[in-house]
Length: 131
Image 1 (tube, helix red, strand yellow):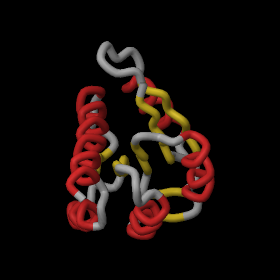
Image 2 (image 1 turned 90 degrees about the vertical axis):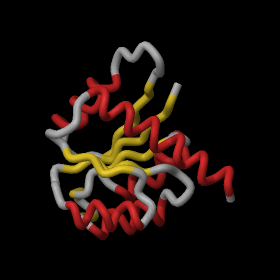
Image 3 (image 1 turned 135 degrees about the vertical axis):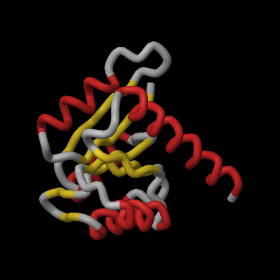
């Protein structure tokens, strides 16, 4: 089972995310959701997720600030951005800051989301092992 911490404040997006991860024949996912980075800091300690998936627009941060705070708060975890903001420059900057992947809502599907999560976890493990 893989634990995922989803930081998303839109209930419809949370339901879609959970639907995309349901009924996998290869991996079982357990998703915990919260709507702010500050709340996620506490859940991270209780839940110990393998990956953090975060929306860029949250009640307590947005855009580049979300990237900076997420990489600070969850520095030892792989982070995937899942956002409605299709901004190539922000995506590049996010990856340079340590984000594993930048996914745009509306452009992803079940397979691409699952693949992004798995790749983020594996890339992060590889980096950790090489250090």
